[in-house]
Length: 151
Image (cartoon, rainbow, N blue to C red):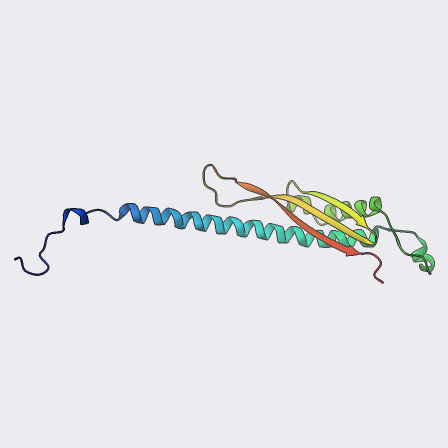
């Protein structure tokens, strides 16, 4: 009987851990890429939501028609809010704040529901880390709304 610690390994216990280490490293790298890309998309969505909120406020403020508000007040009449004037105010706001330069490919949609202006901005978010065969960008949407006549 050989002394302790000098036994030879059995044939079934021989091998290399290199494939295991390489496999775990690949999984770790893919996980990091997914987290970084998801974070980039989240930050883009937050940025779009911030711009959309500002655009909705501008649309609610400047989208209200009627010089009578500035000349003598509304009286008993509700504030008139039109989609065309709200859309023009949102377009001017997006141009003024440089949203098209900050978010290339930006598109917007404005809708007026009663006294509420709703703005929906959509732009591509480029992923900083990608793997061959996977998407390099995604469309991200941010929304905002404002009420023109709170009662």
